[in-house]
Structures are given as C-alpha cells and as structure tokens.
Image 1 (tube, rainbow, N blue to C red):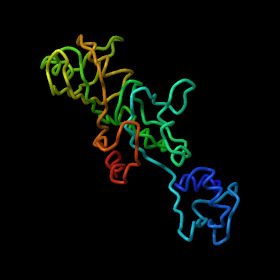
Image 2: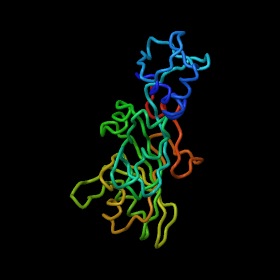
Image 3: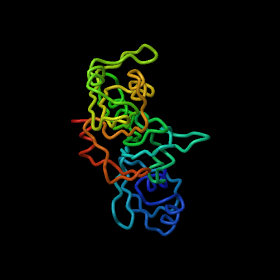
Image 4: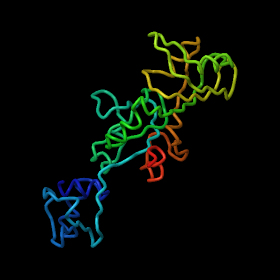
Amino acid sequence: MRMDKLLANMGFGTRKDVKKLMKSGSVHVNGDVVKEGKLHVDTDQDMVTVYGEIVKYKPFIYLMLNKPQGVISATEDAQHETVIDLLLFEHEMYEPFPVGRLDKDTEGLLLITNDGQFLHSLMSPKKHVTKTYVATVRGEVTNTDIDLFKQGVTLDDGYVTKPADLFIQKQGDVSEIELTITEGKYHQVKRMFEAVDKKVLTLKRTKIGKLTLDPELELGTYRELTEAEVDLLLPK
C-alpha cells in the first residue's frame, strides 16, 4: 500500500496534510525516515511510526450513518448526493460501499463498509437479518393489518412477503407504526402498506439485527462501529 494512502486511512488527515507530515521527517518505516508518499509498504511486515508511535493498519472500516432524506444509497451518482459524499476523506479513502440501501426519501440507519464478507453476511436472504422501521402512515392501521402482515401480504407484482411484525404506536387518520421485516424488496415497506390501501408518509430505519441507530447521531452524521457492535451484527 502507498505510504500516503496508509496514513490518510489511519486518520492523519487529507492528502495535503499527509504530504506535509511526511516532509517534516516525522514518518519512519523500519526506523528510516520516509518523505515520499508514493513509497509502498507491507502493512503486515513493515513497522510504520509517526512521531515515534506505531501506526497499526486496519484493513476494514464499519460505519453507522444516520441517512437524511435526499441522499441516495450509492457510491457515486452524477446528479445526486450519495452517502459516500457525506464521509470524511480518511474514511472515503477506504473506498467503502453502503450495506443494502435506503430509498432517497427514507431516513435512518445505514451501514457503510469496505468488507465484502460483512456485507454478504447481512444481505444474504439465507441470514434473515431483521430490519426495523418507524413510519407515519395515512389511514388507520388496525389489528387486521397486524394479522395480514404476520401472514404476508401480496405486493403489486404478485410477490407475497415473508411474515412481518407490525406494532401500532398511534392510531388515527395518520397512524404511527413500527415494522420489522426480514427481507428488502424494492420499496417494500411502502408497497406493503399500499397492499392494505394505506400510504407511507415518512419512513425511518431504526435497527438492523440487534444494532440500534445511535440516538445521538444527527441526520447526515456518522461514526465508526465499536468492536462490540460489529460482533452484535456478526456474532463470533
């Protein structure tokens, strides 16, 4: 790996910051001063230090993002802002990708990583990883809807959804609900309510598996997952 990319990935700043750091003579590889960012190092064999402190390379990052409306779940797009555009350079350098997707007008918990195996483990239909949403719905959601969702509803293309757990938080002309599903068909939550003649007005994902969205994360902000949170998603 290039020296400048390694340092940027490890949080030492932008390319400009890293270049300045290296020119200062503060970066050593196996005890030798290194000032050229293009130098390649072996992250398993070479010892890299900055100001005398050993830099331990981590190959993967795991991020929790509170996705706002208007941002799309993609790595790049010519017309719209993407979730990757929200990342700092030190994380963007890992070339990560979103785990699954949230619709453009849907908010809430989105995971971002560069670990393909992690993504597969969460997205594989065989894993049945749950996803929980809260929503406001036009129309009165009733116990009948709870029973229908538990059985599985037929979407507009004829697909019958897997059983889902629907909880009513507030009934009325505009209802507030919580819904947990184990699959992720296109616009699934919206289409499930359309199947029972109701319309989703707002939608937010709050939980994936046992991982809950950090309530302190404001819309558009993110943080790295802790080791315990990664383990929560992928128990060892």
